[in-house]
Image (spheres, rainbow, N blue to C red):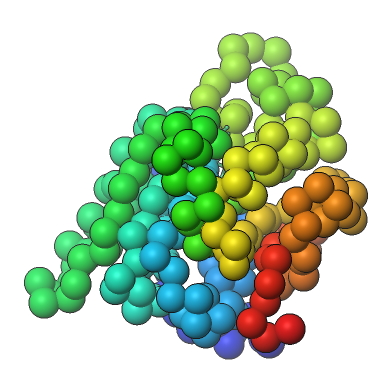
Length: 237
Ligand SMILES: C[S@@+](CC[C@H](N)C(=O)[O-])C[C@H]1O[C@@H](n2cnc3c(N)ncnc32)[C@H](O)[C@@H]1O
């Protein structure tokens, strides 16, 4: 598929100077994620998801993209981030996009909450979520609070600092993600080549019994990015 074949509109978002210092601005990884979701659109619709959860929603464009373009009128969207300002921005992005539309367009059901890897909903919602998306902090750093230079650690660093191999938060998220998903649930994860993708895929296969396939791969400025889909049972396989 050619780049120009991607047709679904990207949500609008507004970032001022202050936002840029505190919230992750949509970047190549975010756009790759939207392109991969677009490729998966008919599959996602066949799932008829009751609940879709985004972990680390940042600007909120991924959740807004799904809500705006996938005709999932009965789906309840949940978006969570460890960064309170990201949660506010997620809410703003959703409202900004729907404020442009006529009132007769159905508004999505969305819950946004501050949390560390969706920990607060584990006990009530285990095995109840149909689909999870996560564009995690994936850049290799000394540790997850490393800002790559001397100076104070800032919440914005948590949006990209992934620790050893860039995969510390990814591994940390897996217990929660796999516990939250229904038996037929799926999750999409952004990974980069530095994360040792085969190791992550094998770990998830052996420990949680999820299969996987790469939905989309793209070379960005200094990294190769992948969107990987994880599933236990797949209606088309
Ligand atoms: C790479 S950014 C992605 C943001 C947005 N989803 C996008 O695609 O543009 C990663 C996001 O994960 C959030 N995050 C980092 N650690 C987290 C954690 N432990 N729990 C929840 N969110 C976290 C960051 O605050 C940041 O907003």
